Length: 231
Image 1 (cartoon, helix red, strand yellow):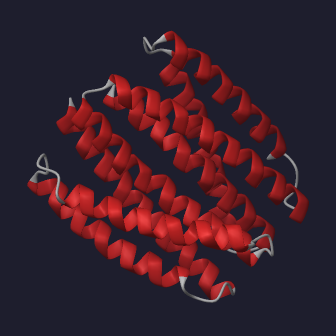
Image 2 (cartoon, rainbow, N blue to C red; image 1 turned 180 degrees about the horizontal axis):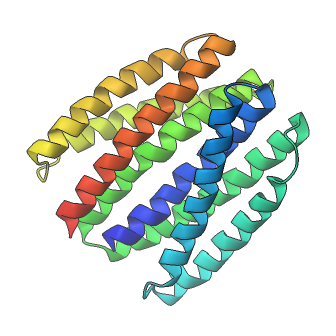
């Protein structure tokens, strides 16, 4: 169950990472990096969905998983279009649907897992999509697609990330390895948060893209460590 939460939780982050990379291409910032991110992210979505389909999941989860795949296929079709202001906006909207559908499955899986391990996996997994949604929001704002709602969401996401880090730091299952990774995560968060405060010019966009990737790597490591102790 912890592995299933991990895979579906990763899909939440990938939905937002795809938008950021696509918008990055539209803005012409580190295009090669953005192309590589898109290729990897899209492969990870398909692999994750295929892996989940092989698991013995409850019927209600199986039904919702089919809906997630349908939403992603619609997103994948949109990604074949060259990046324009209109296509970035359409892809962002579709990715929001994918995030919501994936999150509903995570909640269902969490309820079926051990109360402590399920909640812990959801919390640490949330850090991945929060970091990626923040980066996505920054890029959308730079593309002129931001509004007050987006700015409010960024503020809410920042507070949620900090709150989750505090929850994870106080977890009784933390090993020495996890504590070390948490310290690294705190450091990367400081760098990422500082980048988010920069003006969305070329330097700011490059800084957010790079620091979001660094933070995501640490959060991915943390998820794997917590999954190991949850088994």
